[in-house]
Image (cartoon, rainbow, N blue to C red; front, side, top):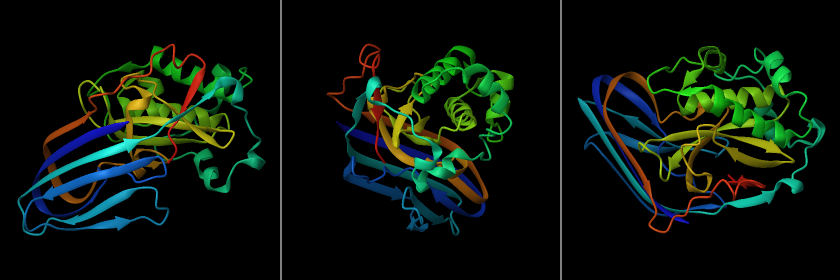
Length: 280
């Protein structure tokens, strides 16, 4: 499926700042960037900033003497997903998990799985199959956490979300990740563009690793799982922020879109016995 993605960010620059920007679609074995363009305020210096792991694409910007920063990114991206029947999904002992996935078992800044361990075991510990546990986690979050814009901020953690029972997509993802890790299931944060997202915005969900395959879950149910374009993957939102600012800037405007004229969303019936894989 081919998606046209667009994003614009506008900032007031209150002092000279450095920005790590993460809005570019990833290039992976199953996600191809067919074309892309990037425009920025004239005079602002920037370059692509490769990470050691190679998972995410960052640009590093120096605002210099600019008093405003305007960014525009557009791309045509082809994505390919795969699906597994539930009967084909089998858990593995931790000793057989790939070394690269072990870090996604540990607590992180926003996903305090160590603080939520007893709760996770109480609610989901009696479910035998790890995939069924993650489905139950995603369903519980959808049913028990209110999606409420403005109810949280950049300091809100999974522990806060389960206490306050409200949040936005990043909070839903953090809670799902924390519960998974508390049950010894590797889980990671997914950020990207989402087709049919209303209102249009950057979107966050999570992936759980079962049988050394990463399955995607969206407890908000705001976006079709086959309509996601990956921008970044990480332990939590700290690894995948759209803009990490070193200095002083103020966001004054933003617009995001992800469209495809031939897109057909997976239905609930499609997902009744199938799990979605978006390989990175």
